[in-house]
Image 1 (tube, rainbow, N blue to C red):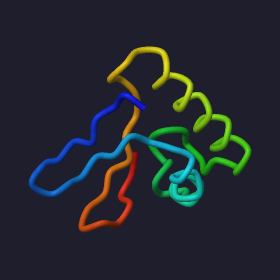
Image 2 (image 1 turned 90 degrees about the horizontal axis):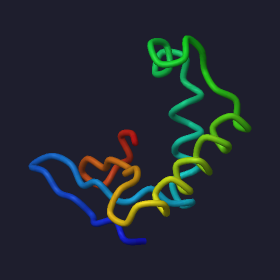
Image 3 (image 1 turned 45 degrees about the vertical axis):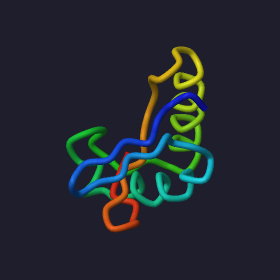
Length: 78
């Protein structure tokens, strides 16, 4: 990957990868998390499909893409 890992005072942003898929599935399965984004929780298949699109998009333009956010080493979102 050509994306850089980014750092802020509170977050570490790492290029999203297949290692984050299960974390994305758990996050997007939460109705309260997805309430204002899709209006409902997403199925495993829907999250997997979206994840694959994000991975593909990151390959199109070097340096651009999607990141997983970590706070104190814990996944907090993408």
